[in-house]
Amino acid sequence: MKIRNIILYFIGVFVFCSCDDMFSPVDENTRQEDAMYLESEYANGLLMYGYGSLPYLTTTQTDIATDDAVTNEKASALLKMATGSWSSLENPTPVNQWDGCLSGIQYVNKFLSLVEKVGWAPSSVTKQKMFIDRLKGEAFGIRAILYLSLLQAHGGYADDNVLYGVPLFTTPLDASSDFNMPRALFSDCIKQIFVDCDSAMALLPVDYRNIESIDEIPAKYKDLKVELSVHNSVFGQTSKNRVSGRIAEAVKAQAALLAASPAFRDQSGVTSEQAALLCADVLKRNGGMSGLDATGHIDWYSSTYKTLIESSPIPEILWRSDRSNDNTQEKAQFPPSLFGNGRVNPSQNLVDAFPMNNGLSIDDPNSGYDPKNPYANRDQRLSNCIIYNGAKFKANIILTGDSMAYGTQNDEFDNNINYGSISTRTGYYLKKLLREDAGANPSSPSNQKHIYPRIRYTEIYLAYAEAANDAWGPNADPKGVGFTAYDVIKAIRARAGIGKDEFNRDLPGGDLYIDQCKSDQAKMRDLIRNERRLELCFENKRFWDLRRWQMPLNETIKGMMIKRSNPKDPESDLIYTEIVVEQRDFKDYQWYGPIPNGEILKWSNLKQNKGW
Image 1 (cartoon, rainbow, N blue to C red):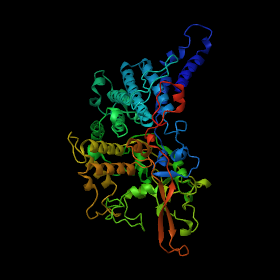
Image 2 (image 1 turned 45 degrees about the vertical axis):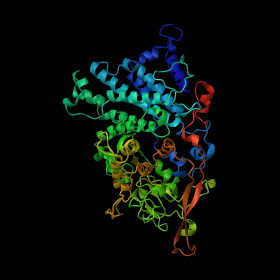
Image 3 (image 1 turned 30 degrees about the vertical axis):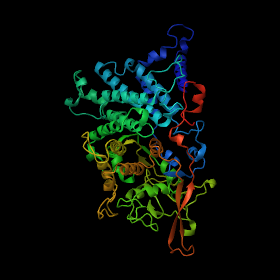
Image 4 (image 1 turned 90 degrees about the horizontal axis):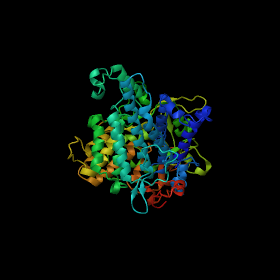
């Protein structure tokens, strides 16, 4: 493991900083670590390395290796992966989490080994204790996240049919450590994640906020006569984007859902009921069903949230990274006519997954779907997430049809990736995550603020619905949670406008499909999975969801070709034809990612996952 490089780094720092005494036997190679106990900023840097190792993405990446999208970037490692090059030798980031997360764990373990010796507030015994509690809690939470990411990316069955996780270590390794560590059982890794989350929750406040009354100070600090200002200086809102108790609780729920999923449940030691109850804990703290943000499916990324993003927390976001002020995503994703490179092209497969606004799927004969007018009367989330032919974007009509349909225009369909095109390969462009009020024109660029969620509440609501349906069925609540899988999915679909027309008027019968699933566990499971696909599209979830559900990976990726029935008549009917865009080449063993081949060659105790 490359953790050895980190250890050598530590040793190098200690030697370098002790060079004045290098010919003296006094304090040989220990001065820097001793000094660290007085230099809290240096010690805090170790924790910041842990934060820096968190694997959260701020752009759409892994979706282009799923049935939801392709890319027009010929050199993309994920494009090559999806079309047959994925191996233990060729395992691109962010799918490969091995080095980054294990390195982060080493930094966190080192921090935990010295946190109680550092002078965080030497002049105040009570403030010193509070800082130690908070920083230890953060470190436990970070370690849980890093191990969860490793399990998602590298957990799997070896040839002995045992489900393994990754090497498990909770103390810092040093130059004398045995690096030839075996992979721990997946179940033991999950247990450690649960322990770390519980430890974090015991030490951290639910949220970082400035309290206004001494009565709000926790009893363990009240007994120490902590002043209000001191409490707020440690646990106040200035730390609001660090790991909190609420975040640790959500991470535990995420880990439980992963462990209870079909790919892992047989040997993970976690049931769907456990996962459902852990998700419910997070949701009840958010107000249960009343906490589902009415505009949470769109406001956190659209230009309409400008006031919200600059003035207050966003109710949909449980945890986010620091906001940015740029136009990076817009330059990458805008259609060419708006000076973008159109990199992520949503698939026809995903477009077809959006139901009609009456709730029925487009292949239902009663849905009202018109193949000659395929985007009419659809789920409003389609137009929120995807730019399709004739859609209005930045006050422009975007035309993705063949040039024979509309004449030459920059955004037209071009499926020939060999020419390095910046046009769409599928007939669609990405809209979700982009600010329409940002500008990509190099002569007059315009930056705008963006929020990058790490955990959205909608994700946890969907996780609860998935686990609850699996454990108890669609409409049962045997543990008195207060809501069911059916309640959650009905509310999410209603929020999206299912059951209403484009003018927000009720349709006859409302959502015509949800009640068909109310007493059918299999139908509800498929609906939940589809709702998760739609709600979380382009947020780097689908790649992992397909694998933990053990769903087919080789769905042929399709697009939409649009031509005129009479190319010489600009008023003639449009003809919509589905076409094949990309063939995928995944094997079933690739439900589980590989251990990097270099690690297998170096360490004899590491077992590779089957097939790799």
